[in-house]
Image (cartoon, rainbow, N blue to C red):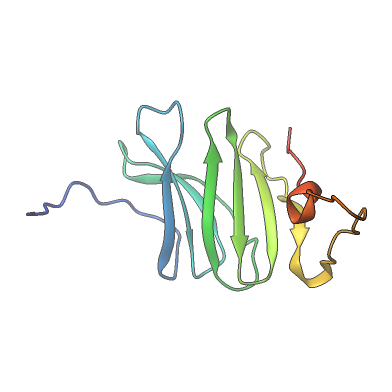
Length: 127
């Protein structure tokens, strides 16, 4: 396959970009990315600029971002610091909410014989 250069996007990232996803319901115009600098950035590729970018929210690299089809304004990110964060792009400069911290993680208690929940039973849905 032959690849061609499609676009150049200016971002505030200062390190390698590890994850990039198209935002649902944006006609493939908006992309969310995460990088070694700990930042989560939303860019408009039709204009080639970042439209939502703040200070790094992870201490260390941010390895993965995810956006759910049913909640396109909510971005989930996880990083080297052990935090799973929720970023609501509708909220101006609010800090992201920490949904999970591996630093303080404990195995969920077993309910005894026949317990089929395991780790999955401790999952919470963000609404």
